[in-house]
Amino acid sequence: MEKKGLLIVVSGFAGSGKGTLMKRLVEDYEGYALSVSMTTRKPRPGEVHGREYFFVSKEEFEQKIETGGLIEYASYVENYYGTPRDYVEEQMAAGKDVILEIEIQGALKVKERFPESVLIYVLPPSVKELYRRLKNRGTETEDVIRKRMSRAAEESGVIERYDYIVINDEVEGSVRRLHNLIEAAHDTPGRNEEFIRNIRDDLEQLWKGEN
Image (cartoon, rainbow, N blue to C red; front, side, top):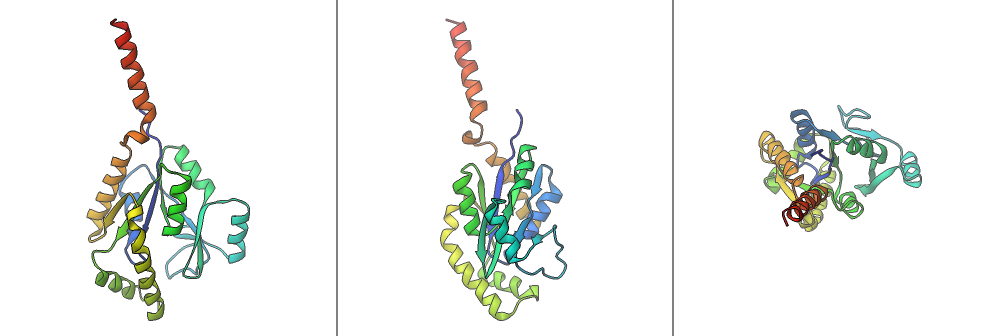
């Protein structure tokens, strides 16, 4: 049976390590395509345009909104984030599971438009560890860190709307659990309706042939 590509939406608190998990997932397992989001925020040290994000101006982003070039978009800490449409549709048509690493606002919009999508939320093992990771980035002021922690408190109220959670305590094990969840999602009855229908039809024909 030919495997159809799934739309996998991954979110998590800033500092939860979701970006690291996504990169390792694509490196360690075949059949995945990591969608590159578009954003108006400035690049962090080491980030490359077209690899971590497409870094664009506010004007360029709003033009994409107007022309329907985004699957979803959201505003987070005074910046826009969005998912370009073309790449996602091409990869899913080729049978790959497309990973969208996006914020809660965008994730819930995707779920509304694509009910068959799989939503996964990445959590740190503790709030103390979350703060430590944000602090160790060394790229943000204490004020920005406080804003991110405050935003995390808000986001925690809608985690139950996701299909699964992954507690990112250790990268290798977390990547393995993430992959296993996605593999299991492929095997739900709702995502295999055609196969089930064919089995049912064949059984009915066999039954008729014996009577």
